[in-house]
Length: 423
Image (cartoon, rainbow, N blue to C red; front, top):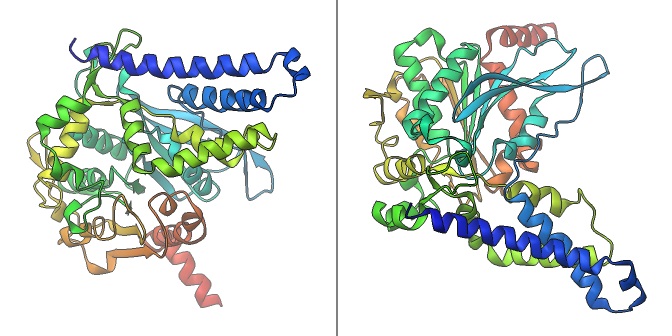
């Protein structure tokens, strides 16, 4: 029970700040206060509104909020979220567009388990839905998973990916974003070795740490500067009695959020100060740019302690993927066994989380893959977020990825060749 008190203390601080915001908003919103021409009351109301919303979002899983999709028939089609496979630590979900024939481009988005929910990729999903049949890994908050379900580390994560990929079949296109890039590569290697016929068609790896030492950043070099004992002592806590996962050792989402925000403290402070000013002047709205971003950014989830610690120890410190020495259940995930999966690397020139070169290292490990099945793209001026969800993704990277998928899809390649011949 050593760390349960600190877990509950953080939750109590969050709850207290939410209550203070709600109290300030309620007090400053009394009708009688309108009789008092005191600007401080307007500021109090604005501060309360922004504060209550911010701290409330920290424990709420965001909704997908996927809008209807306009199909080839010109009609709007409702998007239904269906669970394909349900597992204790994560589900495989499908965005089924009702009334539209299934798309020939079948895409599995591998979402990160790095503090945020899979909804962080909402805009990525929305951008792909008109042209693809989209599936995604929807990881669960560790605080809500009973201890009786056992552990979940990088090997379990990889095994989940193998199961999801085999369930969806070989005509699949994988897009892995950030943290799961090396594990998606390992999962593909396991399938290539054990069941070559089930290999996915393409594998697109976006901004992930295949080799953290290829071009170290402050984030990826963190694992080098601290010992595993220090991490376990300072980052790991035990879930309190409020949640189903009571007693489970986790890296708390609130602690992760504190780390995220400390990296750009000035930027976040200015963003909230400006939002309070806009709210006081009546210029803010429920779905303005600030709220849209921070509703997602502040929604954090706990990850199991074994997943966090094994990620640091095996991916960053020991560089098991970079050394092609990664083992899952005692079996070598030999990346050189990948021989028939087209692989594309996408990096951002200004990525300060997984810098250019870290993800590109995957191509050197693919010694069994022909060169004509390898591709790479560095997006000029793009940061980490932009390469999978921002303007760079929408305008430049997404078309390149779809073209890469089509080029490596036999029927689509044939159709493109016939079109060119007809032209």
